[in-house]
Amino acid sequence: MDINYFKEFSVLAETRNYWEAAERLFINQSTLSKHIKSMEKELGIPLFSRTTRRVELTESGKALLPYAQSIMQMQFEYSSMLLQKKNSDKSLLTIGSIPVMSQYNITQLLLEFQQKYPEFSFKVTEDDAKNLKKLLTTKKCELIFLREPGRLISSASETADDMIHIPYITDYLVAVLPAGHPLSGSSELTLRALQNEKFCFLKESSMIYDICRLACQEAGFIPNIVFDSHRLDSIFDMVIYGKCAALLMNQHAKKALDAAENAPFTAVKIIPAISTQISLCYLKDAVLSKAAAHFVEYFKDAARRQQEKLQ
Image (tube, rainbow, N blue to C red; front, top):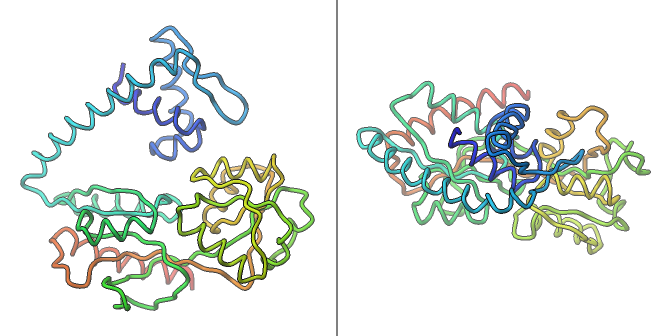
């Protein structure tokens, strides 16, 4: 059995959703499904019970999970040891990123950089914006992709903090509403129009949660938050089946809408616009490694092309 199947099994067990698991693993859903079925056939037992929207571990799957996680840990340890040896004569770039790399094409950007500069390798850590700054200041990451509250920066700049910010993409807040909601056909709406709704937010410890909560308060009401989660599929489920309103960034909703035919929910822009900006950041006083310096220059060119595309 391919040892990577155990990782795929563990991720699917965590997400309980083929689409989200496939996104994390950078494979398509049909490949993931084929691998899981291959595991089940070789082991001679069903590992998951399947419904139309999600999967659940069977008792056999629950029994296998801790062993699969041990295998993953062992694989991580020997892979790290071998990678360390491999990188002894190469430059390793450590990057932190918000956990929506694919929505903002950050994954593609990193892969294209490595194709152009094969002499460099990178290690990426995903975390919320609040924690990414700590990773940077403690020098566990040399560069970070950071989400920042709407502060439009036209070029790389030094701000009041101790970081240099290179802007990449600006995103804006939308209300995700179930199909058939009285406001679902609107082109835009104010937060005040949603004051009587039940709300779903991203997890409480996230920057998006704070932005949405404070925006509602500034609009004159305390949001009735009935559900918060780090998993977008769970939030969409609450919108569809729980008849809730979710406040997300446009790219969160756009990817799900693009992937679905006749999606049972819509995304409506909030006005006045509430935006966030994705930027590449590094410490002002940092002496960048050769790999980081090359990536910064590569990123500036990619950001320029991105801005030209939007004009």
